[in-house]
Amino acid sequence: MNTPYHICILEDDPFFAGLFARKFEARGWKTTVIEHADDVDQCVEAGMDVLVMDIESSEGDGRELIPRMKASPKTATMPIIVLTKASDRATVQKMMGHGVDAYLLKGHFVPSEVVEKVHRILESRAA
Picture: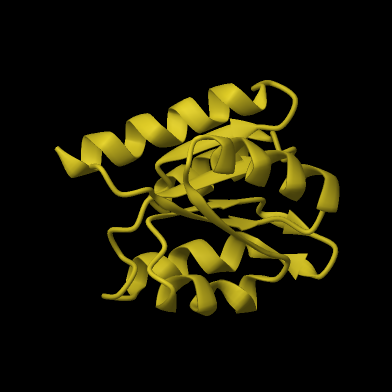
């Protein structure tokens, strides 16, 4: 794919949001950062290619967003990458059961590894 990907980042921590946005933008990709799960529709309308999200936030919990997106014809096949600190086995299994494409733990992956993982997922979908 020659055109840049559009990455939507759902993250309420400005440090993490900025860090990952800069890494994706350095790759030449468009990024949109949102703080609330309710704002994901603006990313969908803007033609996002992938959602990178934290499932935990100060405004509530993004866990309900994933099943809602997977149930919608508009976003059912859109890749979703969870990037979070929530590491308990039950949460990981539940999110994987909802169809997330990757479950990455903050602190276990450096930003460049996250970018590479997202790139591999997008490229495998494009092939």
